[in-house]
Every structure is written in structure tokens, then in C-alpha cells.
Image (tube, rainbow, N blue to C red; front, top):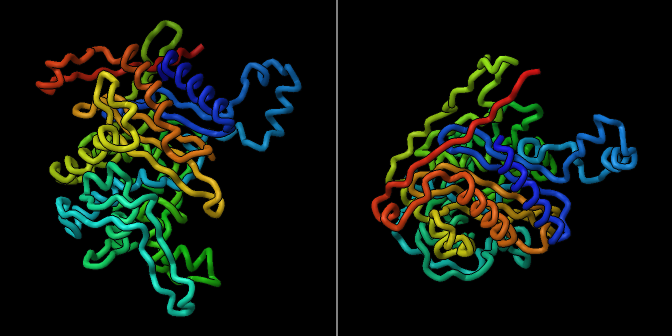
Length: 392
């Protein structure tokens, strides 16, 4: 953990939450090439000094009785619908399975209406958040078009969808729903729904429907992941398909400063995705910043790419807001995820916070500041920070 970065991320996340009247959230920063965690914050947090000293007792009691679960590290133990942050993976799956030409334009409409043969007066309606007109794969990612990804996942008109079996195949290929093996306790697995799962949990309504496939294609329904899984899957796209094992401690020194443990980066899996497919999806994620909801970050001195997500919860009455991305775009050295629970608006509320954190990172941790010439020649370089734990 980078001490200064950790402190800044914590203060920024807490300040944003207080401003919006929120109680729960998490943020992760990491090196996508090594897997090293640079900062990890979960709020509400615990006053460790109070617990170690036994006072003040009112703080201890408030923490123990809080309904907001401050003892949960939401970054690794919280389970969330990923929302639209899953769309880059659906796009990669569609490219690999050759279900669509990424350059083809699809007319984005207000909603897909599925007739109900049992009750014709109550069709199933799957809406987009706006009518986007004609979109291809890059712009569908940039504008987060639900209709496009409903079609990729479940099919629509002349597009044959991937279907739940192939969607789950790619979730598993990118290690979603499984622990990443971080060196912290209580990491959770997640949940990857399929027809067998629905039979188990909903015996009164066991059939897997087209609407179920539509929902998971945009990261809704019973698809549940940890923020760490979302972040590291996004990082693997930036890292040419390499899924890295996350770690907090890079070295342990004894009292004489002798290294008694040194962590080496571990590749959990190298997903074999053609680079031209990755480039299409990466271009769409860059366009989230240049054309879509992340345009505030266009003026950060290095290029940022990523994906926003608004995951509906509690019967679609509330929403969690997510952003997962990386920078610099052409040679990433930092991965970032921010999740805010139940904000008054969708994913847009995460953008000012991500912007603030990445500007701090650029000014304080990005060693080689790129010039205009650097951008023209694609010569950005990367650096890493080191976490050291002294054993007393």
C-alpha cells in the first residue's frame, strides 16, 4: 500500500460520500501489470486506535452496533451487480464467438418488448436509458447502450445472441465468480447465475427466460461480483489478457532490514484474446472518456479509459454507481475502481471522484510526465511503488 495514495483516496472517498449523504463505498487502485495493490479503501471504516486502546467507548459501541457493517472490507467481501462494467466482456465474447461485426451499425431503440404468451396484456419490457440511434460496438461501449448488449447477450431481430451458456463461459474465462487469492482474509467468490442456479433458488419459477439473459448481459440480475474482481478483469483487458494475482505486501523485512519475503508478480491466467479484438474494446473504453459520461477526465494530463456502471438493486428502487478504468491508456500503470452505494444519481457521481484521485496520482506518483511529443510517439513509461512491512 502506498501510504500517501491510501490516505488521499480515503479522504476523497469519504468527502464525496459525505457530500452526497452516502454511508457505503469502496475504492481500489492497483498496478495492472504486477497486481500490486496501491490503495484499498472501504467505508464506513473502523477507528483501530479506539479498539486497541479500549476508548472512547461510545465510538466502539457505535461501530459494533452500526447497521452499515463497517467490519466488512467491501473491496474484497462485498458482492455487487457489476452493471454496465460487464459490457466490455460481453463485447469480447461476441467478437470471439463471431456473433457480430463490430463495425456494423445497430439501431438503438427505446426498449425491446417481449410478448407474454400467458398474459398478452403484460409483455416484458427491457429499456435503454435513452435512444442512442445508430451505434456500433465502440460507440455502444462509449454510450453504454443497453439495447446493443441485450442483442449481443440474448439476441434481437437478426442478431443471434450469445446465450447464457456462452456468457458464463467468458465470465469464468476471466476468473469472475472466483477468488483472486489476495493476501487478505475473507475474500468472497461471487455468483454466476445460470439455468441450474435458477432452479435451485427459485423452484416455483425455475425456467431460465430470455429476460434473464438480457439482465445479466448488462450486469443486472443475480450476477454478483466483488469490486476486486471487476477491477482486475478490467485490468486484464488493459494488460493484453493477463489476469494478475492481487497482493498488498511486496516485501517483508526483519529488524536488520534483511528481506525475508519478496512477492513476485503472478499471472493467474493468460486469456488468449486476439489483440485486434482487445483493441476494439479498448477503443470503446477510451471513448467513454472522450465521448461518453467520463468527459470530465479528458483534461487529465494522461489518457484515461474505463467503463461506468449503474447497477439497480432492491427491486430497481435504488442504484449503485461504479467506475472501473486505467491510465495511461496506451501503456497502463494504474488501475482504479470506485463504487458508491445508493447515490442519488447513477454512475456519473463517480466521475468527479475518479478525476480527483487520478490527478493526485499523476502529480505525485506518475514519475515520467508525458509531453505532447510523448503522446505523439507513444513513449509513455511506467513505474511501480513498493510496499514494505517491518516485522517487529
